[in-house]
Length: 363
Ligand SMILES: C[S@@+](CC[C@H](N)C(=O)[O-])C[C@H]1O[C@@H](n2cnc3c(N)ncnc32)[C@H](O)[C@@H]1O
Image (cartoon, rainbow, N blue to C red):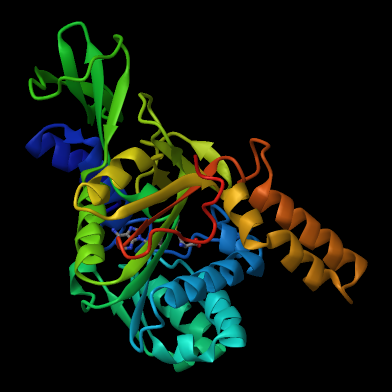
């Protein structure tokens, strides 16, 4: 049975689903969930992420982590955590760069990868085995709470955008939840709950869409609580909005193009923009320090991407030089098909780490 049929049957027996339940099934269904059933990355897949564009991305984040560890007082044991590591490219590049400048950082590190997909766990294992990073012990986890407590550095690139959201539409009567039901032909279709959400007091014009990512906010709270009990920092990189606003940002991508979010659950990548204000507030309310967000372009330039590209260009062929120039532009450029402005970078840290590299341009 396809996931589409399973969801349609669920709606017949239980009634319309929230967008949150739909996203959870489409992305994480144990058999047919998008991430459970494939490796979606690269030219042959559905999308390309920053670490897959260039080794420079992971390398600079590795050096950022070494700098953080130094600011933490070089603890002898460190959990290096990555949420949703994809193919493991970022961590492999980060460990290789870190080993070159600080072998004692690698010796102190224990890798903890939060990943639900068995297919991607196998890719991550392969990627790490190919690098020197394999010398740092690796453990995989399903949930953040399983990761052993202690000093830590956490990296999350394009992870929070994959967490499910609820959507609410402002109607003449108040906020009503957007639901997914069946139309007269039995196809999936958006609708609205009959119930008005009395607990939502936000003022907005009719037609405004409010998105709430409870999974993201609770995870940020868990991270914030650990930052208070232990020393550490968390780096979140994703596309999203800096100031809280209204808008429908649910999107589906397949083969590098946008498609209908209800068309083929389990076969398209579903994401929503990350609300950095909500994530930052959840951790800051507990006492963690928030850094940024700054744009990805600002962050990578401050970490020295231009110098790293120049260094790699020395002795490179003309084609390689062109590829490096193109990758630098894709990662830092401000055009709508480049990531420099669209993607934002925010860090959260323990109060004992009041400043972190990469955030000097933060307002
Ligand atoms: C868009 S990919 C990002 C991959 C990687 N960080 C990169 O930059 O290439 C999202 C990753 O998060 C994982 N993932 C999605 N939802 C998850 C969840 N609820 N728990 C754990 N991992 C999840 C996916 O399997 C995948 O590895």
